[in-house]
Amino acid sequence: MKLELTSKQYRRLLDMVYIGNWVLNSARGNDRFQDYDEVETLLFSQAETNGMPTLTERWNGQAVPSRAFVNGGIHEAIADYEDSVFFDILAEDLARRDMNDVPIDDNNYDELTRRIDEYMVEFELHGTDRVQVEKDD
Image (tube, rainbow, N blue to C red; front, side, top):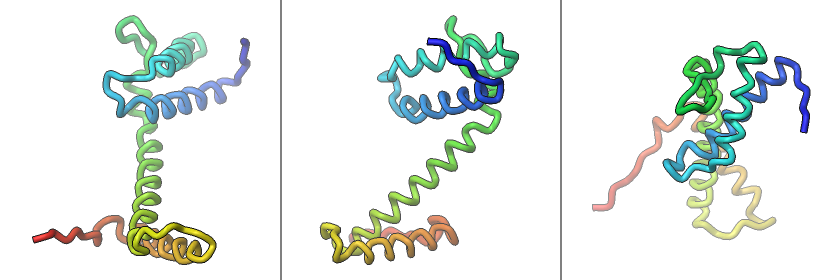
């Protein structure tokens, strides 16, 4: 297969591959999906010959994203995504809890979305600052 990209498209592809591999493998420890690591290595191995030598370095003989790449803001994008997903999941879980975890259907879907929206407004205004956990004594 041959794929032709502009420099800008290739640079964006590196970001997407890194983010995708991070999502798939960052929490897996030694049980990584090696085939995704291999694709990442393949794409980053082309950085130097495509005028982007600062984006890659060698580690154990493999091309990997450089420290400059990793520290260059990509993790802020990942963190923004993680925050968004966290609050979405938390809002829905709390809304369902408030509704006693009843099955959702056409009759109560609007109530669920209203409650989710209320939690999302709370999180947008205050984050988790006003979330409390009551201890059982």
